[in-house]
Amino acid sequence: MKIALISDIHGNCVALDTVLADINHQKVNQVICLGDIATIGPQPLQVIDTLQRLDCLCIMGNHDAVLLDLNTAPDYQIAAPLISSLHWCAGQLTVDHLQFLQKFYSRIDIPLDENTSLLCYHGSPSSNIKNILARTPVEEFEIHQASKTTRIMAGGHTHIQMLRQHQGMLIVNPGSVGSPFADTPAPESIPTLLPWAEYAIVEQTNGILSVNLRRIYFDINLFCEVISQSDLPIKNWWLQQYSVK
Image 1 (cartoon, rainbow, N blue to C red):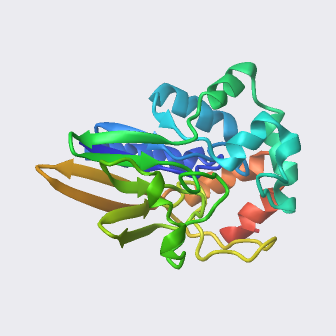
Image 2: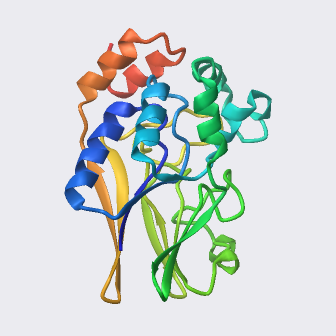
């Protein structure tokens, strides 16, 4: 079994298309999206439409949940500078798009073989706003919520690629397709983005479990052109990230 994990696309369909092209070359059996698909970036509808055509399993991220009820933004820890982009994104969604989001899972356990499964979530097994970082204390991993066959846990949310091991359990974060962070930003501060798209491949073959963290460069000039032509409220932040004036 070979599974591609994508997460935190955040309205960047240029990066998503690049990642999906690479995934196609890897000949995976399944694609799983770990959440936060449409908000912040300039291409929310294109991202949602692409995922609908892909027909992959999707996990409910905190940004996805907020799109279903904008009044819950404080509960899902959405930073104040991003609120305007949430409303901009929500204003474009159709009933069909919202119904698609409503079908997302809070978490899901995927069998890799008869003895091994993959537990997928957004932030942590119990919360889509909780961070699991390289420095997170092991007692916060919530391994107790895994099944007897779970050998690997996977979540996004932090926008930072990671692979850790604890008591035989692998904990993986595929990073962000649309806006990978150079480091964890301080509360209410603006993160610095890296110039590529990130995802991961989990493979279980002949009793061997492996994780491949991948980074794929995408066409930043094309993405900046899309941003420039949009009326996204935070377009200047995106352009500054890529040194476009």
